[in-house]
Image (cartoon, rainbow, N blue to C red; front, side, top):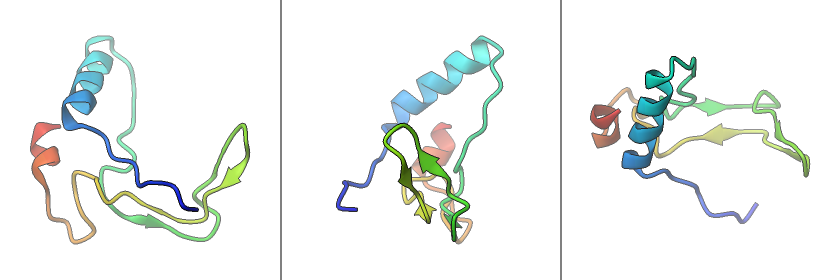
Length: 75
């Protein structure tokens, strides 16, 4: 809704993943693949409830075609 597409610096991502691994924390890489979520399966932000009907991470390590980008190799 007019918001800028968010991306994440790969160095920050790798540092945070390393920190969680070092501390034995369980985590999920959602979305490691660019994929899309349709209908109302995307959930919502809370507080300030804002429904997310569809999402697609164009900055994901793996794109919809299954091709990897440099972020994939860093992760």
